[in-house]
Image (cartoon, rainbow, N blue to C red; front, top):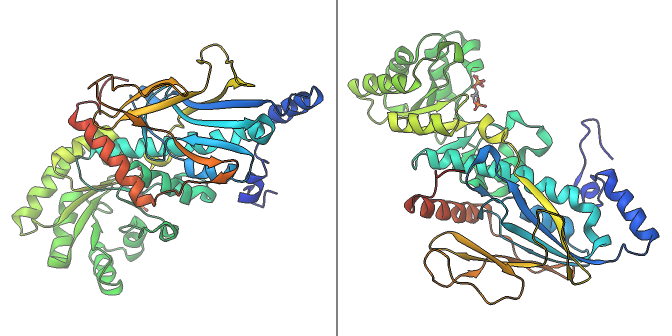
Length: 398
Ligand code: PCP
């Protein structure tokens, strides 16, 4: 059960201990009336995408598969990294309601939270116009889920993240230096030189340049202090000093270039969102550290609804009844939803062939799908988003 941090472990989650009490009451009533083993089809779809955004990125599927493994059911799902839209069915679970009905809380918990992070990460990554974006936000979440959140941000397309646990999923953590290092030294130059002398060569020399005086003068100081060993400067300007960050970036770029620092990168962090990253990238910033916008992202509002009972289509108002198949046209990143078992539809955009988008991942409780590596999922996400960018679909109306 929960430990001192009130954190629930994997075994408790798999046992269904994270559950809304009304599901347990539902099971009690269904059992009392002999309906608990009704064969149902449950469908999961996003009822809305946060902030009215036109698309989201699906994440948390691997965790749902791990949650349901071994339970007598079949699960079909779009894979992690799929770019999804409102009301598009992303997952279909078939089996006896008693096998998974009370797990709805955790099924949605994984999908809502991780897809919210992946979606925000994708937006800020695409706003950066191909420049690196690093997740600096694990400090914004409960430590128990930091690696899950970092994984979701990578699925969304960011280039890296700052936590050392990342090594467990095949990524090297990325970071620069905190203000505390410079404040304790009391002198920027001494702090930067010590950083350069003490740390291994592979650590990039990115000097934080806004601690005691302004970004322009400290950037010049850093170039004078480290010379060609200076890889970059980080601007993390406090809100009390922020005017136009774009103008500050342009000014720093000018002063560095004037003094032979053309190769010195300008890294910006602190309270950035997708719109600010877009403007700063256009102003010449080379890379970004984004925390709250990614790790404090609003969850995607997935709903799980029974759409078939005992083989008969049946659903609540607002939900189309019956099991459905989902097809996708990769060329247009366009989906089509048809009653399960229908003929494959043609792409409504180009008229071309569409392929089944849902993958059977669990059959009779046995996992039959091998999840891709996070780096491959990230590539899949970015390929869809870059295609949408080419088609002018990326920033359209919600
Ligand atoms: C923050 C710290 C985080 C950044 C900003 C995340 O700066 O560098 O990595 O920012 P966000 O959550 O606002 O997007 P500080 O709070 O100044 O911390 P530090 O001095 O350690 O850099």
